[in-house]
Amino acid sequence: MTSPRVTCYVNTCTHFVAGNLCGARNIDIMHEEETRMAQIDDHTMCKTYHEASGVTSYLGSMDNVNWSGTAAEMVLPGHHLDPSVSCTVASCKYWAEGRLCVAPSIEVTGALANECQDTNCRTFESRGEVTFG
Amino acid sequence: MKLLIKLLAVFSVVYAVSALMSRARVKPPFAFLSTALISLLGTVGDRVLMPKMNRTTAAATDSLLIAASLLGANKLSGGGSRVPWPYIGAVSTILGGFEALYHEWIYNRGRYQDAAKQDEEGRIIH
Image 1 (cartoon, chains in turn purple, blue):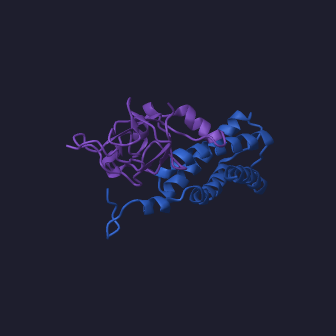
Image 2: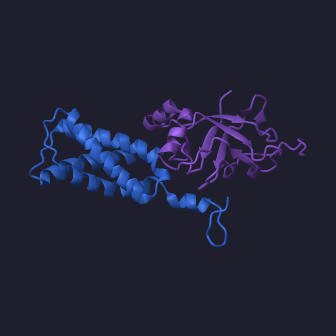
Image 3: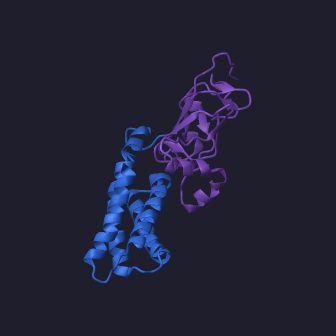
């Protein structure tokens, strides 16, 4: 199973790479509130968001950097930098067993975010049959 | 295309400043090595770090990076070139100015500002 193509607009994240790319090795898309299933895209978030606020923030996020992908993106024309996507938003129609996202591409929005709750998976589409409680 | 323009600009400035400064002498190994170092490190910085910096910080950081690259290139190229401090200062300043313009070309800050939700007074809403 291949991961979706990721377009990211969260320009305040340490993993953000100019060109709307994500330089993380893996991103976790989750419900914004643990006790409530997402019903709209605003209820989702990219938990991997790490605010870029100085050298220490970069050091703190270095364990999740896609080094080879980032290097390839810089030198290979046409290469698209994509992280693997681990998704727990079971109320989305693109979610699949095993924390998988089966969408061909996703968009993570939240320009000028300063915490992960400010980000959203814009590709979220409600599955419909899931009950919310 | 953008990278090619950057390479040409760096290479031209490295040579042009040495031609204007009698104390400086630049040999081809230094010119090629410094162009490669400045462009490689600059490109990585422009993609990964620059979007999270403000305009001034990004240009100033690039100037420092250019100065360090010139010193490094001088050492690595065997020292056949004469690279005095005024030369390093002049090249760093000129290329720092170029980078400030180049950043605006490769990264549209306004688009992200527009994309963020704002209230009536222009404050960002999260």
